[in-house]
Image (cartoon, rainbow, N blue to C red):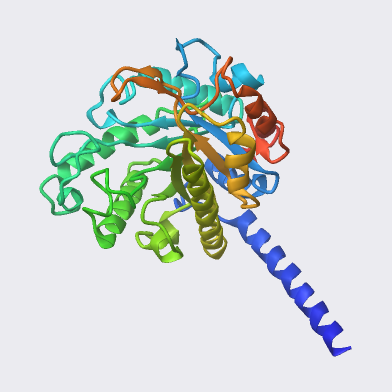
Length: 385
């Protein structure tokens, strides 16, 4: 009898905890307490949406693909499945200098229109920012020590940095839908900081400096009236073995809406595939634990296998790596096509295109009940309460 009562109490406690957690998620507010109505709706609806599955995303999905550029309404994913991705990745790189095109050559005027199209049909746009190095004037991959210190308050390049933030803020405030409302954006600044390749990475930046940089950025945008951003904390798989590694640079719950990581499969041999799967699954489990504890959304913000050289990479390698983790989305990188600037020159793409030798596996992946594409999320009305 005593054992039966104990079991019943445990079951009641588990149900009560789950109900409390769900209630907290539905009433959770973004880090920006002045977030627009649509941004709040997106944030809260994303908690509900992940109970249905995870969304599929693609970088620069509407701008270009393998062997095409700027064809209205086109997407390599749509060419294969008849449906668009649910999440669309973009980049702010070169907006710091108000150049006409982003770092991958997409005109910002076109990018703005793409973001509008995505919002109008109920999809989600997410932005990274491969910001130039404000200390050296070179690109994001120039990573001498001291860059972050130079742009914090009191640093030699602080005013330069603020001007760059001004330019980004001005741009964010031009992103509007056909309804005239500001488009909510998943903003992923200072991404992959656990690596060693960008000027904000941990090999040149202390946890304290990174946290100060992050908090300053969030506060500065809010002060400029930018209230359509959800802030995405993003590690890479590099140097992340434990929960402590994942959270070492975390700026705090009041400054983050979503936590995420980036991971790519390198090479097509069995050992590299096994490593990719094991690392993806392990970090997903770490991230899910942290997300539950801090009541944050989770995602794999970048991933992929260049040229997709394995017949069941989508349905087995990627999907099985995610397993039962309740992430909001997974996004694969861009379909540049032939890239003569790489050493050696080769095809550079991460989503299938019409005629790809393994496109059937992606169609099967698309048809999985757990994967959500544009037609699925349009029905969810993510921007409405």
